[in-house]
Image 1 (cartoon, rainbow, N blue to C red):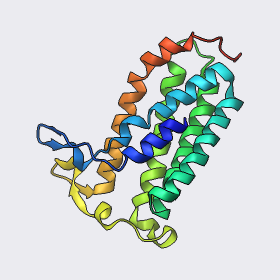
Image 2: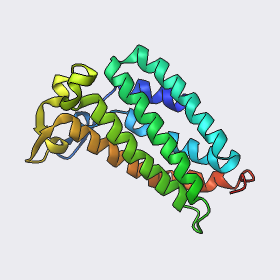
Image 3: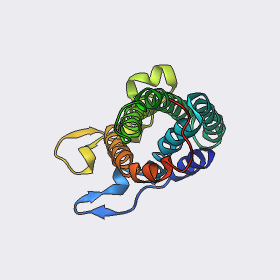
Length: 196
C-alpha cells in the first residue's frame, strides 16, 4: 500500500501528455489517476486473505504515509483533501468488501467495493481540494482549478476545471475497477481466504 500511495503522490504532479482525437488528456488527467486504483486491489486482497481488521490496518498505514508525503508535496488544503479522501474511500472499500464477499459471484465484492470507494474518494478529494465554496473554511483555492473551461476539455458546456478533473479521474477509477478484476481473480485463490 505504501508503494501505491507514494507513487500516486508523485505521479499526480505529471499530466498525461497525450491526445485522443480532439481531447487533450493533459487538460484533465495526471498519471496518478492510473496508479491510485491499485490501492483498492491491495485493500481487497488483504481483506480477502487476512480479514477486515488487517485490511483496516493496511489502510491506516497508507494513511500515515499519505499524510507525511502530502505535507511535503502539496499545500495544506490539498494535503487535507488527499488524506481525507484516501481514508474515507479506502475504509468504505474495506467495509463493503467484507460485507459483500459472502455473495455468490467472485467479482461482486471487489467491483462494488472499489467503485463505491472510488465515488467517495473522488467526491471528497475534489470537493475539499478545489470547491470555491470551501475557501473560507479551508483556505484559498486554486484559481486555475476554479476557472471555467470546456467540460472534459472539449464539450461546448463550460464548467470549473476541477469538475472535469474529477469526472476524468472517476472514469479512470471505474475503468480500473473493472480491469483489476483480472489480477484479483488470478491472485484470490493463491492463499486460503480469511473466513467470511
